[in-house]
Image (tube, rainbow, N blue to C red):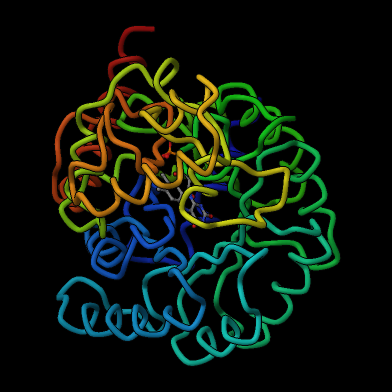
Length: 354
Ligand SMILES: Cc1cc2nc3c(=O)[nH]c(=O)nc-3n(C[C@H](O)[C@H](O)[C@H](O)COP(=O)(O)O)c2cc1C
């Protein structure tokens, strides 16, 4: 395998973001939970932070105003564009509002995910957002080899491809997918000739995971679940306590639409479903308790504050299968720095020994 090729892809990925240190660490966009505080803290530590979608498309603008304010107050972030990215869920996004936000705030990158109608819809968003801000890089997150190939062969390919393995927290492919360990190298090989760098997402929690992803062909790594346990995440304490407490993601997480429906969210394209911690809502659902009854119990739990989460709780607790590796809440900057150092240490220890 030509290592020169992957080094060049790492350079290509990094070029538009001169403040980002090696290895390239990304704070993934997480709906509501990755707000401006988290995204700016990740970028300020030499990573690239993404703001996630808000509950409603027209609420993003306030987050971008706040990000701008935080960047202005930061001593380390000076860049002509806004040095954070913005994530859009295409299926329920509003392209007109997104285009006007990107035109106004000029984020350095946009991250598109979950189109109902596949690549043609992603192309429509890409063209519109590039028209709004020429230098904003377009990142597209996919979870299958065929979607990765469709993206790089499209008439308007992305600047960066994010490969999401099935370990990932939040929404991902229901089927036709695989873990990062096998999906990532197969996609990296398949798209190498395109010259589009690949960023890995799904199950990366520490420097071991990051080093593995880089070895498998990623030019950078994105983490979501790990940043749920950051001081800057926009998350309830009960939820965050669960992220730190939970272990054995293989046994204690699964993908289901149940919690979306309990929260009143319907309409996700059928190929996607969120990974969540199992709690009473799921256990009772499996035992045959009707949805209407689950909903009443869920809505009561929602009124109980932080007690609504936990094994006996009933609220959605979207996390990745790597949740058991998240053991404490830290500042986002500290997380970026720790993962960076661990990654280097892992790679060095292996190269000294092999
Ligand atoms: C709570 C949560 C919310 C998420 N929301 C989004 C989102 O709005 N848009 C998106 O593209 N990805 C979203 N993701 C997925 C992340 O972009 C990323 O693929 C994932 O977190 C990587 O796996 P990890 O959680 O194992 O690090 C979310 C993930 C989590 C945990």
